[in-house]
Length: 277
Image 1 (cartoon, rainbow, N blue to C red):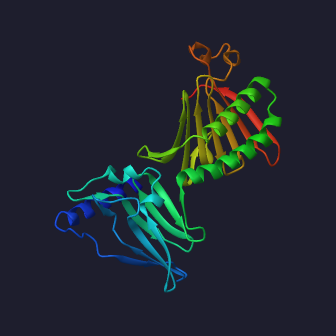
Image 2: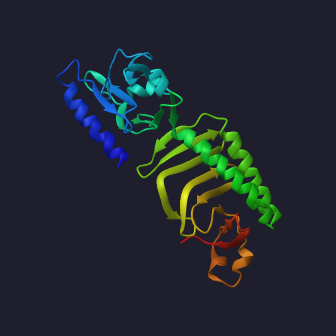
Image 3: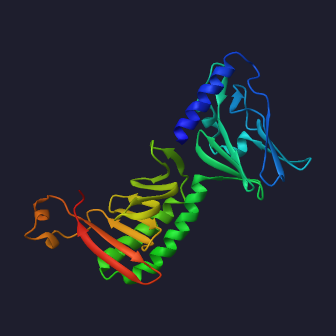
């Protein structure tokens, strides 16, 4: 839906820019509580002579100028402004909506939000930091419940690697289904998938956020869930073929997956090995 939205924005704005040097009449939007008004100065288009000081939005609190939101503030990489070009302008993104907390935006780097209280831009990467804090807390509660020392070592090392990758600059991408943050360093890669609502996965649990870590030594997925289980872990290739002796699984030439299902509030844990369908 987000991809369709930005495509429709692009088509609409491109059709306007084809016949006008000034493609947009400023539009004014109001927060539901009436405290703030926002004037969209560009309608998603900026001149090809843009710079970091180009104003995209003007924000008022009552009748008083509150802030000017400029390209340099919204974009981590300002050159992404030029990712979509029309005949005479660049399409930087779209105004999506306004609420009492701030302005929701969709630009060429991904979903973002301008927060009135702090005058800062909150991006998907910021959201991932919040979910990482939740993941770290859950894992620290879950590890004492894991009896297999080899798995404890893998999970602990994975958490340390994820923390290290957060020190790198992440980028927000879209695979056509979900937005995700990607962090890379050498042969280590971390994908964090956040959606607007839970989805079914990880043993049919209700998943809020998924972390997928791949390194030269570790291939593991963490799922923050929202039902009778609050953490679900899959160690890919971490199972034991001995558990399938005399069964169909022993015919595979690769190791099974190992899952851990936790409810850290009740100290519940369940584990097992399986081969994916």
